[in-house]
Image (cartoon, rainbow over all chains, first blue to last red; front, side, top):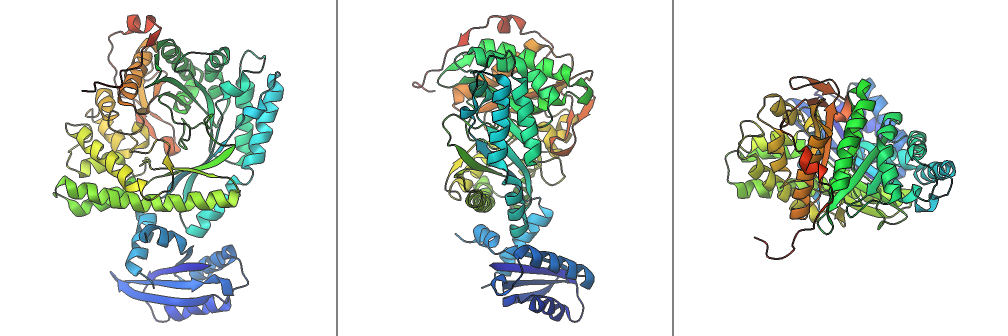
Length: 89
Length: 452
């Protein structure tokens, strides 16, 4: 499934590396990535493919939330469908 | 390619603007549950609801997690019980309400609607029994909602039923007096009721509906309010355009959820209801949208015009976004469920009379309004008659959900908790309409030509 991973956090060194390491461990493939600092807040959205992973979407979601907490990052993953529905005719 | 701005906009709507799916409601036909023995009928009702809706909760929870959008309520609507239970010999239909309540709890849904009767033209023996059963049914169950359709544009107004409903509302208030007359929050009196409404308390699965269907109600007052801050002071053309675009986005999301839920549950997709449904949370209010358009307080002069534009633009924007639109579709103005309406009612600016005018141009009607506990049954019937007349003449759905809060008076308020919110007691006219209601009979259907 194509999904959007969004990450919000106070900026620090190594956030992208940390998130990508978590995704790589679950064999989730990163297809595209956009990152900026918005009002001092690290803001990143990634397009990923969860089809390469052996884990279910729910397990990936749970693992990201748990790892995010440990890393001090607000990470979530949602199906890409919701963004397509709202913004593409 | 990633469009970061669009993605962040959606996340902001979800996180800060209270964007949610208000309800996924499964409609279930119960006509095949009729049986001469009322207890057997109740057993069949329980079994069929549980069988049809057993996956409703896990499926909707899965969609919530996958899309990252809250689905606030999961509900069930059923065939009007007067149609199902009148084959039974029983004198009252409370056992069927109890079965509905148990089934709703087994399936884990928030509410079940359909303890209903359609009596716009007249009452069958079963309709009479159902109406008489409503107060006890609502007092003795937790999740059951009841509704009665007392009029339509084609049939006129059944004034005998309207007189009866005033008494039923009062009796329901008395039987649930220990809970702030909460039973009345689960009872709606309709004119031109729709058969595919996913919203409570008026949801039922009409006789023209399929065996089973999934209907979805969207929400999003907070999203519209936030968008409108960008066009402060601009002409109304721009306001209408912006609301249409926003409603389109919200409804697309509703359509996605409805289609996904229908596919996974293996039942047909019914409708998306394009309603702007508020909650008592700050930032999720229809009244604040109207105030954003330029009103000092919702309820002052100009409120009806602002609401007319909002209601129309929501429909125009939403229509194109969904394959099938239905239900009540429009802006809701339930007083106790809307933080801005509560404040406006408390300040005395928003009155029952102004709310009645507002219902001429928006969805539904006099909704979640608490009135003094000593309001007579005749006065409640007269309020229902006025509201039903607006629906009948204007060819639209109107409804009344009044709570004559036992033991309370103007200046008090009653707290229902959760989405039902807090209702300040609003004054009604003390002058009597008893002689009008005592006439009974039928107000004929209006003329459909020579419209001026």
